[in-house]
Length: 338
Image 1 (cartoon, rainbow, N blue to C red):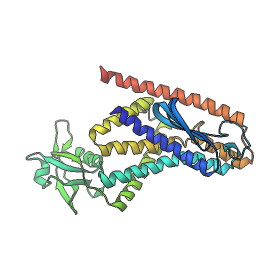
Image 2: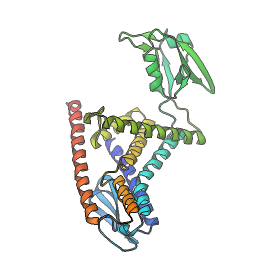
Image 3: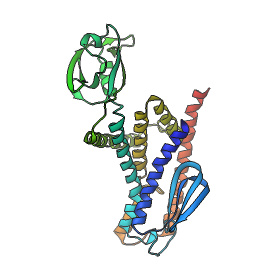
Image 4: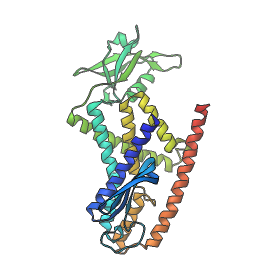
């Protein structure tokens, strides 16, 4: 299971590098090496000016451009291109991740269904749901007229309404029903209507899948920006941030729930990878975009030695951060393994 997750996440990173690869080729830049994996290469072959490599550690990939790390006036080097071309090449990696997320979600909605919409699997005898007329196969799409198509939101309203009448918005076939129900109060003081649910198996049509994919990616973007705001205002601790180990562990957990959840998680990873890489921090793509903008404004190249030094320092800081977060991931996992 973990091997499958690592391969899937590596494919997301490879798509990111492919974005750089394609845009660099279109701009006439020599791609010196394009590799799958990390570490020493197992084998390689050369086609045109590019060496294609398969490396020993099956995680991630890389795209090495001529003139990216050294000064060069050769017409086929990254350093010789216009600021706008440099901007496009740096932006193409994150953009490829956004496109990948859109494709993953559209295919998920079209072939597997929406995992956030739940349908009734079983009903407890004598429960509020049975008394209200809810039957197996009904889909929960909202409460009190607020159509969210999100079971988590529906469940929250039910949980917060013990002994209070609410309207549960149901989809039964092609018909929408508004059913009044009074959740019973549990020993914990929360509301319960007595149903067992499972992900809906209703599949969307072509246009519906595209529409839902766009909407979900918008929510991903919105949540990411909100999360950033929480980080900068000190509302999120470092323990709440997952690193590579935590991400792989969580992804493996979604597989056990269902493939649609796993694909949703991969889409989230793809979006986040793209957005994180847009941070104006060297050596991320956002840092290269900043260098391109500075060059465009002042009509002068940034000194390559200065650029390389800044990228090196930034890389060291980034690796340190990854190590710290990974250590936290492992520390959280150790109690589970005991």
